[in-house]
Amino acid sequence: MNSKIILGAFALTTLLACKEKQDKNVVEEIIEVEEVQPATYTEISVKKGGSWKEDTREYIDGSFVNVEEMEVPEQHTDHSWYIRYEGPGWENKQTAYRLYLDWRNAIDIFGKKVDTLVLPFVGTDGFDSYHNDAPWGQDILKAGKSMGIGGYGRFTGDTIAHFDEVKKTLVEIDNSVENSSVTIDYKGWKTGDVTTDLKSVISIFPEDRFLKAELTPSVSFDGLATGIVKFDDIPLMKETSENGDWAYIATYGVQTLAGENDKLGMAIFYKTDQAKAVEGPYDHLVVFNPSTEKQTYYINSAWDQEKDGIKTEEAFKQDLQTKLSELDNNGKLE
Image (cartoon, rainbow, N blue to C red):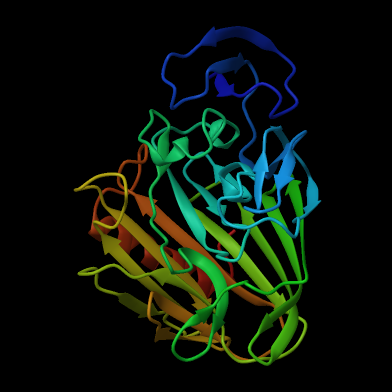
């Protein structure tokens, strides 16, 4: 079956046709290609050819260009209009995610209604057009003051310290046959009396709806945390694997920006000897033990409008149990 993908996003060999799309929420030009598109994809796209407006920290003019590596400019902050959809994105045929590459450092969900890759299209027809419903889907999660789903920060007992003070942030993109990953090196991340480097590697795989996250701090400190955004009237679910090595926290219900009745499930799987679940002000948290060892966890989501997706809470719970058993047996999902 032919796949559809934006011109220039991938190395394409056989072009069949070009046609115009009328819907402004979708890409205007679609190239149909004979080859099957990649099973996974990640990207980061920045503006080139414009300039920084010093008094507002906004990037004016220019055009978006995909890059494989970058150093985040000192001027960059939220809504700088410099990075397309504000950070890197990960995608396979079932789901897509993005990370706010600024002080917020939250992870968001792009709900997909199609099983083809869409990230090369997102935000090309208006910086924040992805907040609107479109045939491909839309941004569905409201992160607010939280870390979204699986973002990371430091829990200080009554709040989460995000990434307000960082000396340097370096990003590298990798697309391979096995997976697609983003490596982010935060240099000199300061929270309270602690300053550390933090290496983050987040990967997506050809099948299923999860991301694998690996965090490696350069110094041992308390409070390194991830979590799931809290919503009123959405209860927290918890479960530990049969042998006790893995556990998850999860939520399911009406908790999206997409519609009044659509359902979203979110979960984080973590190693019980590395972390514990606690409550924060804006997130259901997983807080890691002080260590300089790599901390591994999995981020998982399921939206009921996905094509051939998980449609009920019971099916979501069954999927979580299957994953928990796989972690028990194999120590990994991928």
